[in-house]
Image (cartoon, rainbow, N blue to C red; front, side, top):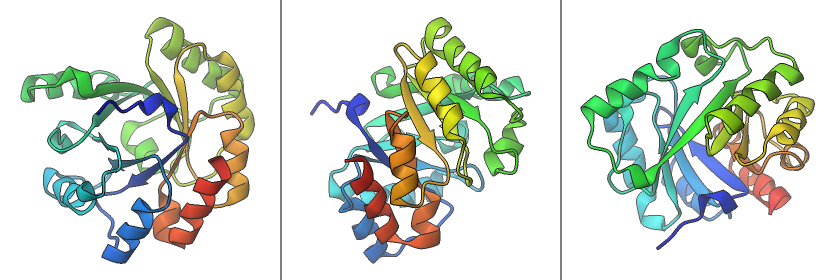
Length: 228
């Protein structure tokens, strides 16, 4: 079955390092979200990624693995591998170095690979610290990174990642106006109908993750309803 990931409005991000009960898993998969993304920054291993995949695989939703590094790549039983390159990192490993290791260590089904241009904007987040991202960027500077990703590198996805905090809608609007072909993802701090609606005005796809663990399934369902 062909899955058009470009048509997704709402993606739910599940962290292999966090726990959901069977009842919560059922709530997630019946929420109306378009797809599940299995992704995390800290303490992500093949083992806990496989365990999370086992818990959600039977429900029939499109499944994406977004690995933090080569050690967390799972390719069996999923639909896509979304592979980030962090454009505003100060460490080249997060642009191409980890990817170089990955290609050497794995046989890759390139038909399932979707490259993502990440722009990380929360300096206090785990991903911001691990990748040493320069988060002190103006809307114009973020839009310039997005333009490089879209027009020069031809990334299919530009991902504005505030990871754990609600971002600046003006930044997301500036990026949206700068893009020509890339699909715009937004993630970070979406924990209400209002925030989901606000970011969905500019982003093609919103990603909801922490709200599930912090506030519960009803909040997830409210964000789905806001964008669909």
